Image (cartoon, rainbow, N blue to C red; front, side, top):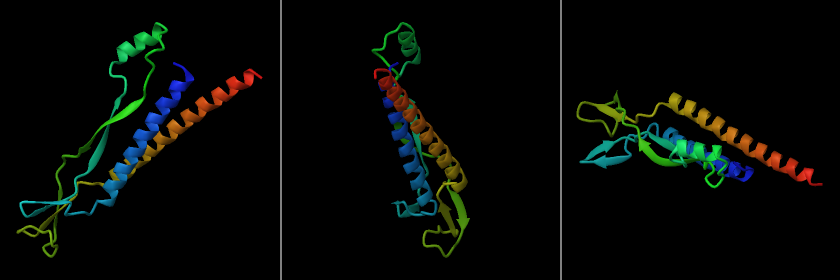
Amino acid sequence: MNLNSSFGISASGLTAQRLRMDVISSNIANAETTRASVVNGQAVPYRRKMVVFSPNESNFANMLQAQMNGDNASPARGVKVTAIQEDSTAFKPVYNPSHPDADSEGYVYMPNVDITKEMVDMISASHSYNANVTALNASKAMIMKALEIGK
């Protein structure tokens, strides 16, 4: 693997983690949204979203074998976002008969967003983002040192 491909790997990680942070921010912003849509006259709350990652190289065994054979034509390509899925956990019923979105029994269904879980995910995404920045800076430093050798 050459140093240029390390830039691509880090860039794909930065892009993926940035999208993950955006989705988490959206979840936090909509943690109290009881009417994200209306179905059959009934308010449907916001449903938590999650980002799904997958490797850009679909077959790890083939990639590993190519690298062991010295074939640099198929370098590692980082990560990609394959989907943004909705969390299927149940909504939280809260008794509040005065709420405009309350059902006939007085319950309002709140989004399935847990702020604590979102904050933990945000910290994880932030650390992953910073790790990719560190890897990118290390690659840049190695290239700079290699250029200094030629002086």
